[in-house]
Length: 90
Image (cartoon, rainbow, N blue to C red; front, side, top):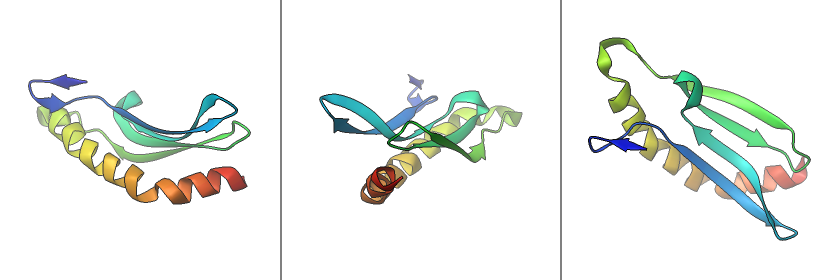
């Protein structure tokens, strides 16, 4: 979601097609007041890892989330192959 030209909320997901159905491998999102990652397994288990709390003081949370959007895209792009391999092995 954007507001005043800034990304203020996001969820970036990586999925694989399994038997004609999209299945989530990993996701980075900004719910619950933090940037965090969900790593899923092929059997549906989930690891939730907090990356960084979103600051609420001084009204800079929009800038913080906006700056994390590109970082999260880069992480997802750079780790795609390793996450897919790990997902299949678990």
